[in-house]
Image 1 (cartoon, helix red, strand yellow):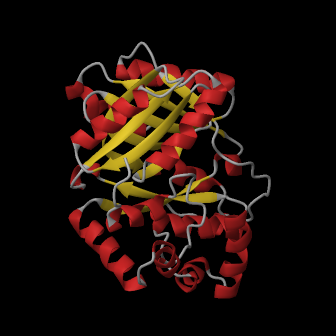
Image 2 (cartoon, rainbow, N blue to C red; image 1 turned 90 degrees about the vertical axis):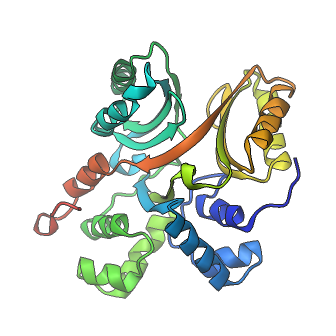
Length: 310
């Protein structure tokens, strides 16, 4: 299990913050460089190379659902026919509340979405299943910290500016919003510390030279699940995402060298005490769905500044 970590993977890990969401959207390249023990120029060069190859398509800022009074959920689905998948994805992307979609090779599909209440959750799940022509869906809820602070008009303008380009400087944001750079920095501090939004890199896993794998680990016993989660973090060094808050199962995304390494990890997981079942999918891409979230942000903007983000 213990193998040297490729520098590109280490940088991606810092960008994605696998143990949580990347809440500090303003973290500098110099800070990332210091964490992994290289110089800032190396980080910039590697990220530029990832952009040029198409592996890193860019970044998007995504709102904590509690900022807009909603809850979060995820659904793992299977499309009835693989040749319908692009059509299914297009349909689901148009649904209110959908914020992230992960496309797997084959028929698998994952949807991360926001909902109002139990009824809204049930209706959305049923709609997803209907569109996919799937009888079942694995569903989980939660994963986001509370956020009770009401955003003001300027805060929403800053959020909209960050949605256009999370890496832009405070001075650029200030010019767009029409306030001072000092005001932007002052407003960003409580938003960042309060976890109002997080940064999500958009990745085309087909452009990654290895294999991007997603493991769904079913472990009904809470104590044994906690131990499995601990082992997963200790034994593997290629995690780019994890979600362990669901009851009875955990999700891990990893960048593997090849399919043989992925199968080795898969077999190791199946043999762990308490693990009932493990599914392994290879990922094609993750996408932040802009339409609904952009429209939600627009609703909160001062009337005089409203215009549609393109």
